[in-house]
Image 1 (cartoon, one colour):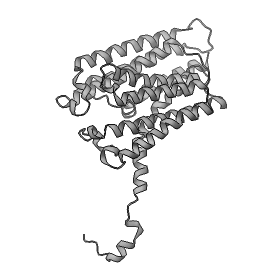
Image 2 (image 1 turned 135 degrees about the vertical axis):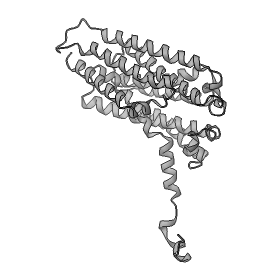
Image 3 (image 1 turned 180 degrees about the vertical axis):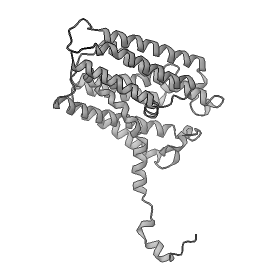
Image 4 (image 1 turned 120 degrees about the vertical axis):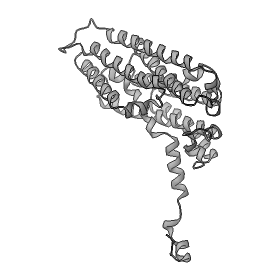
Length: 314
């Protein structure tokens, strides 16, 4: 239908002038990946396992750490997308990212990302224990090195992304001065490697024949090798979790059932369910897999309930 509004009226109407600032702010928020902020919930993993989550001090400190880690990860996403804008335009889905699509100028992404990368550790040094600022600095250093070069180095690309998950779990314990079990760290580390390598495997399967145009390193891995990595990581994660739940099993507890040990069943089922998507080559972002599969979500709730009962009854 033809617009019959007079030309002068259309020119003077503020509703018809697009908001460049609003579009830019929305684009920056999209680059910060709000959907992936759920990864930062890992900061409560150690305090939850230790039963030290429900005090005002713990909740305040962990909320601060969550915000600081979210700002740090946003800085990495901004800088990464600015560097990868050209390559992302060749990807079937990444070409819609705000920087690749031109919604956020590359210079703005660099400026905002650099500002957050400086602000987050400085704020942590002022507001949190020194080790929190140190962990954030290590995270930013490793992730920025990944953006610049390590994403092109075999194995190290997997290690750096995996370490990002592990540091999220570590920082929560350090923020509240909670001793970290070695089995907790091994479970978290290899559980993260399982999801990261499953995602790489799925991407390699989906982009077979044109992987070099979107993630050059995928041409260096074989699909069989990536399958071996996620299967090995899943096995180690299960073994470590079993040893973690058995750690201190000789201590008295007030519950009717040994919930901590029984949670092994839910954990193994979750790994097996996630492996279904890995085997199909459809294990993309971990949060997408968890949120879109109802069965996996139910298993997760059952596991959380069991472990919550274990913490409450010890």
